Image 1: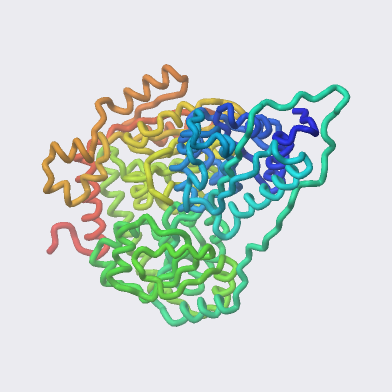
Image 2: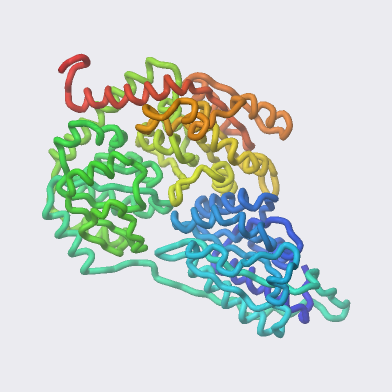
Length: 591
């Protein structure tokens, strides 16, 4: 796009976009609107920015979140003024709490039109409140001389990118007011394109956390306790921690309790990686094996039994937290270290202890739990636990799994096992909502990684717009598989104590909310209308064969699986009971 050197608005937008590209941004998600025309046109015409268009701002926000997770780089979001900007809020909140970098650019009316009844105008100042790393209301670009607009917006681009990344990544928000006319100024034949200038601001920051004091504290902490565990919570960048965590576990002799979203639920040579600590920690065996110490990396774990186990025994607790986010709702931490994997690795190299007998006990208990779980799942019809286990078995290397909140993420945490080849596992655990899950998974897929998303029937219905949007092949087709476990509503609530005491009709109406139609029927109708594949399966073998058959075909597909909610709830309870017997070494039926 040719830009007039006299057109301050478009000169400013070009400076902003090129500055973001220089800072490493590669993707932008644009929602249509008139007030945002200068931003949208400039984004689309900026070399180095891949532009994705989504009509639904709520879905677009989560799609951008998934893009940032998949690429590891900030994603730009662009929308017009009014409720369009408000619809980004759920994704911004999730990005804030889960540490995902977004640069949100909302167009706005100029100051003199606010509060006077101008159409599509709301109060967008600090619209996302404390859920952003930085908020800035920019000047009206057309009020600045072009050279000043270049310099100001170049600085804003550099600052936005730096605030969105670093040790505590997250979203930033620039509210950009535009005054009409919104279309670009015509370029006269003899004017030519404005000469390129060196106005891009580059910023470099060393993210290492070298800390002799931190190293000494970790060495002293590990050396003082033989019976410790390393806990790995959700981390997008868990692969950067893998070597340091593995070496710390090897040198300390502590087992690794890694949830899949940490990216560390994988086979690590010389490390006891537990697969089923969610059910193990509910057993008498776990309370007979209390830890002396816990070292945690990553965010707050999904596993509730882990939190309760720590609260019951109150071991010494070290939180390795470079972002200093203080994610400790149990108030158990006794040593808080704002250091990164480099310091953990340095400390590991100085350890001389070896609690191998302690680690072997964990390995043996986890193996007994796995055998007990297989004994139940292999003998029964496919339910939710079997689906989670099978995804871990069937998804190939180089693939990603996105787990919806409620039961899917918990089942993945409980039943997905470590494997030699890495499997990237994502979930929206920042605010833990079920909104936008398909959109977020589509964003991960759009970053270039074939992605499967596991959702319940309510989360599936909650984001049907994201499913339809994922079918849009521009600018590039994506490979997305949506696996829907249809258990007849929000049956996770039936695991709560209230289920046993509240009137069944009221409970179903207000909590379970069973849909009128099964997901297979809904998906089949949508598939015929939109054009994606739909498959309905009823067994692990069918699911395995289907996942194997579709890996070579790029595209969008939905797999539906009907789950009997009563049988599913009963199976979860029997799985826990089987692990209890296996962990304690008791024979079935013994007292």
